[in-house]
Length: 271
Image 1: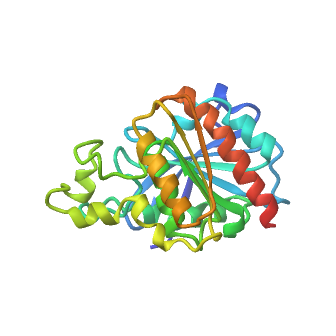
Image 2 (image 1 turned 90 degrees about the horizontal axis):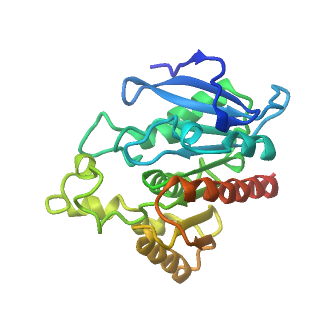
């Protein structure tokens, strides 16, 4: 089935968007057979005569595609400052950005890493190469940023995580993950396979630029520390940022500045 993209409204005006142009669109997902809402934030200077790098920005558990422009602050200013496009797809209430082995109607890895990118590259003036494509997110979206980045190194050149659930195994009863994987007791192999820390073997050192950020008061801090140490053990280059902070928008509104700056530096160096 042909991928289609439908423009719902030319511009959404959000106080957090700055001067940037904020579109809301729906992208048809052939794998899920439904339209998925997406926010696209373009710089105020956007022109069809230039190709822009794209950062795919994922929301957390129970959130939605509007979070980064309604709960977040300053995304439009960052897009203008760094001359990039930010794409914020809806990831469902509890998808964790997997192609769920339990729920065939939840194929969010396929959607984000294939269907969405094809639609965005077809609609907007983008750098159509991994050298101009990054992915990151918060919490569930932090897991998604690294999970999709590591598993799709031919698609993304840079991947990040903010307060990410980078090892799901200590949380078998949380955030509806069992609805997508089955219970840990009944499907332990899935839980081992679908967690970020256990797919580091897929990384070619230096092939994917990685940035990880987590607050010391976050309930995911311990698993982020563990991931950092495992990356060091494997000699996999990455940036790791730790500062006081909890699992909230105060932290993420600060963290996203470092994530996008890191990705902009990658885009510039990869040209």
